[in-house]
Length: 297
Length: 269
Image (cartoon, rainbow over all chains, first blue to last red; front, top):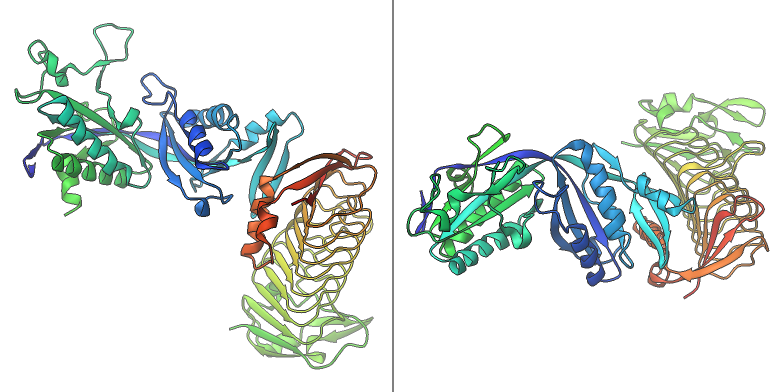
């Protein structure tokens, strides 16, 4: 299958079930909201080496946030359901509550919730105050510039992690342009985030010749290893590969992001687009590239 | 279709009509509604002795007339809408836990006693003891919202434990007396002895107020939670100015004779 001159390899991305929540961070201005969000999403690129995957989803205009101040929404995913509360609590407590003027609200309506503000409230050392408004409990935790306001409950749900695209081209610069165009297009989709820095590079396989490593370089897609890796999957005209990992609150969102990403990369001159999988034995979701392109007509 | 009850005979003494509540009226024809029991002083009467009913009992009930002497309207209400096109008597919304009561005129004393959910909106003034505990009871309002667009008299929110009381005008004396928790917002002036013996909770006013010596000044700041409350009230049609939403408030902590975990927030600028 082709989009313009870009060949789409007939394969699928293998994605997994993860657990996720959404935090809405607000502050007196965009700068502090973004600062807190960047801090909260730091060192959260891959569960291979980080305790969670997280990224800024989008900026939210003041008139759409719970407290009428500029906001940023953050999506945070973990592999196990039991970890999501702890990760939200750690990162909101250490990265948002510590940032000037901020507040943090739940951004995901879900039947299942975890008590985040209810755990953070103890930082108030007995001076914390609970407020109930319209059936929603808020905690006011005294801090040095006033109060940190945080929702008691945050919605969590099963999500989709590990959707991916391999975007390939003739040179690193040209391929990166195509990959970034794909990232920009994917970030426009609601409920989706790209956990890697700037959205792309990544590229690892499961396992290693060193038994203590759970992941190592994906030699099958390393252009410099084409001559030595028995697993290489790169034709001769490919000199760079960028992988984009896509996480989303649901499968349709991830599929739509992948669809837009493939089209954008093709328009920017990617030569080949593929995806990573593990033979379909590990992940719950098989995101077939040709199928996905068919989604959009 | 709503059930409409129109007062045709003014009671001479208070009429206790706790049957006028949506779940008691649900599904009743007008004729059956008129046969519901009520107490006129110490005399047993039927609703039809005072009200003309029309329509059929459903989720909405509309009452018309000066019901200043009709007590216990909306008692134990769990759902639905109850609209009073006029004044209403004592104990409106007693024991209410859901639904909404709208009073287009004034309300007498004891609005929302023992209320735990739902909303009462009074477009005029209300009397004493709005959301307060009955004498001898440990707590008053335990949830839900009472919005009075006009003034209220004394002991608003007495011993309230949870929920929101908002007053568009002035409040009398002893607002939030014995308050356990919850929020009282007064857009006008507070009377004297506000927050006396308060344990926890928030009393807010948009004007300076005389405070008890058992309250200690803390700081002037912008309490973010209040912005959410004021936006919420504005969304319900309450008159809230931008300067109050975005302004700074002086915070006093008290009552130091109790837990000292309550607060009075007075609009600064």
